[in-house]
Length: 227
Image 1: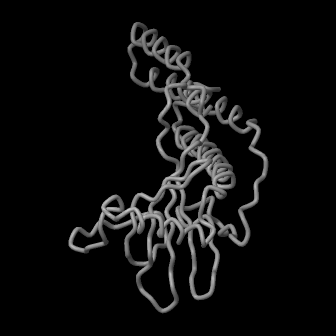
Image 2: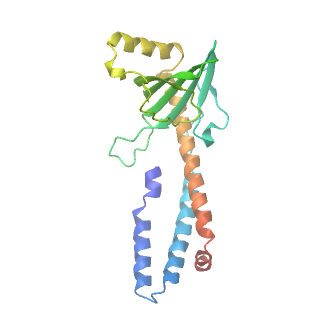
Image 3: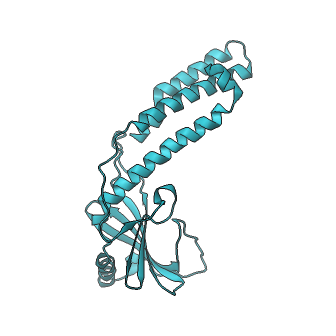
């Protein structure tokens, strides 16, 4: 749906016609700029209204005892956290690239999950980079790194973080999967994180339409042409 909203071919053709007609007319750069800015403002407003009317997914609660981190929709920090004994488990998530060719299929069906297991009084945490799917969780890497506040990892090539996960023998890989399963990190998280990402995408897109519109609206030529 997002791609259908922001990839409207009719809007692009209207824009090209406006440029052509202005170029063949007075030839004044200011007239072209005003027309284009006005068209952009109208398009941003139309798409903002269309997106704002989309029906959100049903509300889904995270598996207990994970708790939603306050303000997580507005930043790049952890989405869910929980404490078990002297451990704190933090989950960071983002959408993986869509692999299908169907432009109308904009479902979030695969997620990138970053799991950080921290212990009190220790500077480093155990980090798992995983692929999360509706029916499975796969570990891509395991490393020891400094504690993470946001979904940004510095790549210090001089620091050894561990072997490739695929280089580990099957028994050890199974034990690491069991380590996460024991802490409630499994495919059962998918429904909540899928809905959470939908809401985040929705908010970000509305904010983008609004901020670009506000920026363009400050151009006096756009205001004059839209009047």
